[in-house]
Image (cartoon, rainbow, N blue to C red):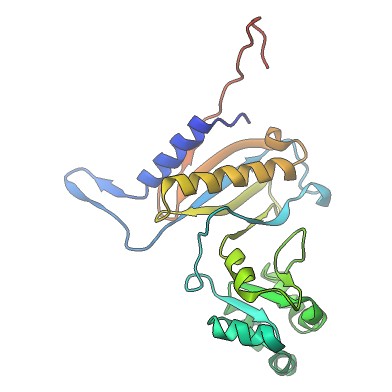
Length: 246
């Protein structure tokens, strides 16, 4: 798919406008919560059954779209990092709590995992994390991933403040059983320039993840949480001076 800046900006503008509910003869209705801006990418000419063709990575957007209040984060940590995480107001799970969870039934473990949106773990605790909660974390897609695929496994000397700040920009980009990628890239409260920069950065990232880059993209749809979807128009190949195409 040929993606142009103009068509991308036009679709983004329309998708934000569509978040406002309008009806003739009645005042416009703006929803009371801060809607997320989502992207749906339909893929083509790619065999998703082949694991090597699947996308399963985390990406850091240029601009933050989450807050600790809207995205519940839990640290598997200990020692100084445990203290820092608590001081910053994050939930923590130290080795003692992990041992307690290991003694509990499957229902309790599931409840614990469902309580949080994401998890970050010290590298030296990951073996125990996987042993105790691996099944639940794996089934929900919340298993912390190491670099270069993700940002969920950290070193003992990493700053919790820096890591958590990065996580507020983090999104998950993946294909599952269908040739579709769906993720968030912005917030309605974010100014247009920052939302566009997030969108543009995400598409450039995907170009490097897909076998044939943008050639594997069939269509792109943008929408707010409650708004009507907007399809990004495909650009045209530019003609050269000799009348050919480039």
